[in-house]
Structure formats: C-alpha cells, structure tokens
Image 1 (cartoon, rainbow, N blue to C red):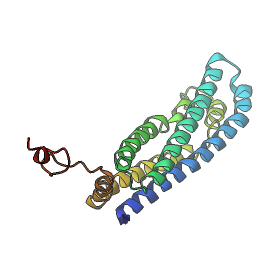
Image 2: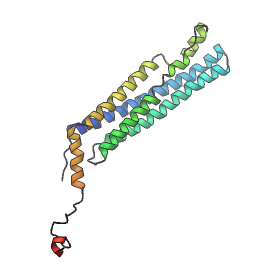
Image 3: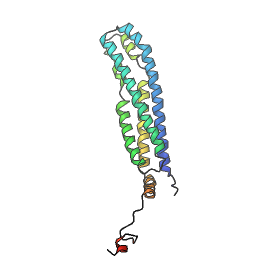
Image 4: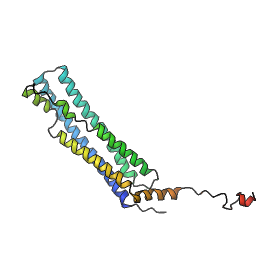
Length: 200
C-alpha cells in the first residue's frame, strides 16, 4: 500500500534541514573566531604580559569556542539525520524526531549560547590598551552572530516539532503502523484449532 506524505511532514523535514544548515554556518563562524583568537593573543601577551590571569582567560575563550564547535557539529548531524528520517513512514520516526529535536535544542541552548564574550570584559581600572587587547580576542560581531544563530536554530526546531504534532502528520505515521501490524486472528474467528472448530 502506498502512503502519501502529508504537507506537514515535508515542512518538518525542510525545517530540520534548515536547522542543520544554520548549525553548519555556525561552525564556520566559530572557526573564524578561533582564527581571530590565535592572531590576537600575541598582542594581548605583549600589552598585558604573560601572567596566569591572562593565559587563563585566553585558555577559557579557546575552550569555550572548541566546546561550541563540538556541540554545534553534533546537533547539526542529529538534526540532518532527522530531516531524512521523518520523511520515511516509520511508526517510531515521529516520536524519535520529537525527542531528538528537544535534546538538540537543549544542547544548543546550553552548549552554544555560552556568552563567551563576557570572559574578555575587563574592569575600568585596566588601561585602555589592555581592554582593547582583551576585546580583540573575539570579533566584534561574535555576540550578534551567536544570538542570531541560536534564535534561528531554536525557532526552526520548535517549528519542525509543531509541524510533526499536527493531526495530518500523526495520521501519516499511525496509518503506516496499521499497515505494518501483523494480523492476529481472534479466538472466535472459526479457523483451524479455534474453539469453534474444536467444539471447545
């Protein structure tokens, strides 16, 4: 039996694919931030000195960016897989997609939106040259780019989940589950060995 895919399922698949695309762009942004950090740290060391505090700040920023890349990559892979999986009329696809989307959204919100720029902020007591050297560890557009990426990813995941929760999507997977369900004859169906046949 052929199963026609409803519009809501196609929309959910497209939204998951778009979320994966945003994740891929976010990885590119974070790699550019790592490049900026690598070129700016030497200037910071020259201006502020190679103290434990300075080295620790640079290490924290680098660690945050690396962690964000890992989370963004893992979430993007999961969401990309969901984009393909939900198009299949598998009975469990909808439940798995909803749970995975929730997990990916939580991972993104907790792992990517770290406000790393706050680590480079210095007190007003520092000299202007030192503050500028700290600020240069990250591009000026980093906070805006990460906020936009986070809002877009979470919005796309929520919209995809809403599409999968529509009645047409639920019926799509439920109909396939009925097609795949094995036939089990009832005891009173009258087949060989049944109580009616044996006279029990």
